[in-house]
Length: 477
Image: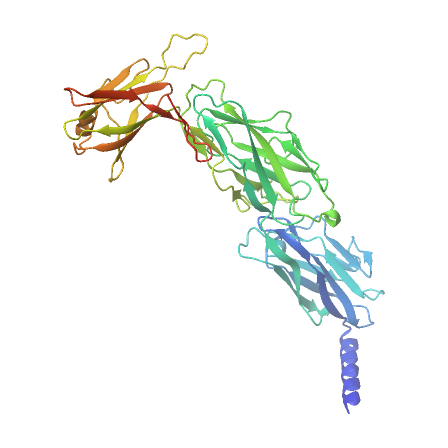
């Protein structure tokens, strides 16, 4: 009984195919594993139509493949019929109008002939993934009109996974710490990491943008050529985001010019041999600008943004949409510490009839020609730590030798702690220790505790080294 039913079904199917002169195709695909989420010309996988039933020539009709996203390039579209490329469309021809491609439709016209079309393979379609945020994969839908019939499965995966082309970006660990007075010449390494295997292809450009270079600092990228790496990828520095011209010299990046440096894949690893996620490490020379006035202003370079180029609307792959691939480094890359002197008064008091005299000299004007000091003026901030109380700070704006809150080079600040507390509107009673931060180098200080009758005792203020090294502190006189 089952055998009779099966034979009847096959006979009916064969009769139906013969009666309408249709071929019945099983649909399959070989999807691309992963593409870039910011790509606008990302390759889709091959779609195969294999004849399951039918020995008659296919009668006129169309097959429409709908990708669901805009088709941006069919420059390398190939249609293979019965195992042989059909570039002129003798059997199957691309008849998509521009509006079809913009809507994500590839329209194929199937022409009847003496040859039975047993298989059709469509490959080389590129689509805009970046314009469709939230996609994690891509599936194409197949339909037919006329007498071309697509049977069985009509939904196939053409891209298995969609991910960022950039996994991360990181700088030196630990970060650079530069002196505002003598920044010197230093090297910073910034490394971008590929988002997935074969994300960076021939022609891909990775741009490093330093958008907040501290004032007075300049960055110079090097080398002009990076690689080959372990897999053989070679990067070439290029002059701009289009990647047309190789750089002959390293660009100088400052806070006032275009702070982006570009590297292009000059020699790529063949996809079949690309088996590991790659990194792109670039060197950055960090120094003061030639005309910068020292000391520099304190500041930081907190982040560098890495993105993919060239940009849309170009249709020659690879092309990426602006800012959608960007990754920002975590943490601080460069810190410019202020030109300061940090003084410590271990004990100061205004209790029981005593007061503390404070004397600070700005000796950035000196007679020593062999080791001159840059003349500097700056403010003074007192950080007071009362015994059993809460720390508070005071930055005096007058008295004691200050001019508009600034102690000039070659001048002295001389004042009583009681007067400093009164000027700041703080309680008159104090006993504890004091940190003094002078916003200039070569500051020296002395303090005196006295009852202004029979007792006076004084000592030099200790000098505290900042930044501290591994949590330890250096104190000296």
